[in-house]
Figure 1 (spheres, rainbow, N blue to C red):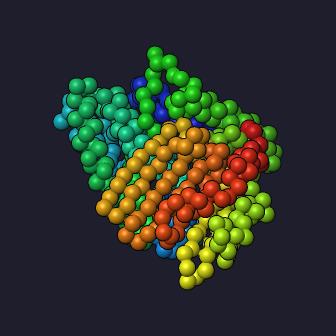
Figure 2: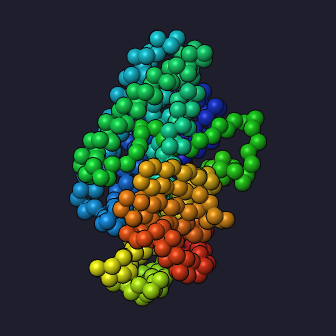
Figure 3: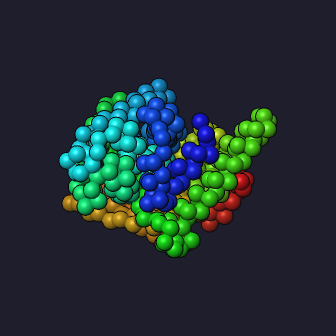
Length: 421
């Protein structure tokens, strides 16, 4: 595997797809090359981060707090998701190939595999967003839009379809992809439990259209993505040099730097040690005593994440659960979410849910009137998440609980443990 070539392809298909698709269409390749050199590698990304989410971060379940799956069940789901994703790419390529003549194209099984595999890039990269609290859905949703756009650009180049028929070709292909995506999710949910079913798709990624003639604002999401691509090139070069040196420590450090860059962060990040995180979960909060506490630091794929959980209140009265997460090496995903300035609001007969910006912080608020339960979470310094949840009289109590924490001191630690690439 040529790591530099892989990273270059990822960057180009995401950042400059208009110029990359002709290159992809014209290069010689076999189905085996595409699978072993691209699909089998990138398809593992959402599976691995789904495993981290299920076993390290866990799922927030009403009335039950945070639930983490056992390694066995989570690993089974991850493997199954990985295998089904690869199968979906194969099946989709057959469909794209079969549809080609209908839309003025030429049947070619290898080119069809190229179209599906490389258009799926954004989905696999967006799979990292699984670990971002309460924003993973929006990251994946944005990815769906961008992957549709990638396929739209790619079909005329790879399948030689008529440009005026590219939209219809794409639409029919995507409808089939959505059906396959739901089948995959339902099968995986059968392993993990229906309560863990999350929205997803074969396709997903970031939204945008970048071409050579467009000047990108460096402060915009696409500007940040372009900068990310440059950093990936640099990190890949460091990895290659470390491999040539034969120095095991240098290779380990270079891999950590590469992973940190891939996650959009500023470099390797050592998350807060348990004894550093524990003081932010005080013995009493808004007049309620702390009844239990658990703080841990976990390491997966060279990436550290620290989580602190505490429950306040007596068993017979109102209880508030507080969770503080240091995303550590995955803080780059928090930055990407922040750059995207995602905001949403929805309301039902029994409650509401909204995500919005409050100054430099992102806030997530959810409330259910029918059972007087909800949650209130704040992202701090594009690294930490402070969340309060429980059955209380109103969401204001959860807001007050979060406000009573020393958020300023926690946010001030956003640079602690960061080791620049």
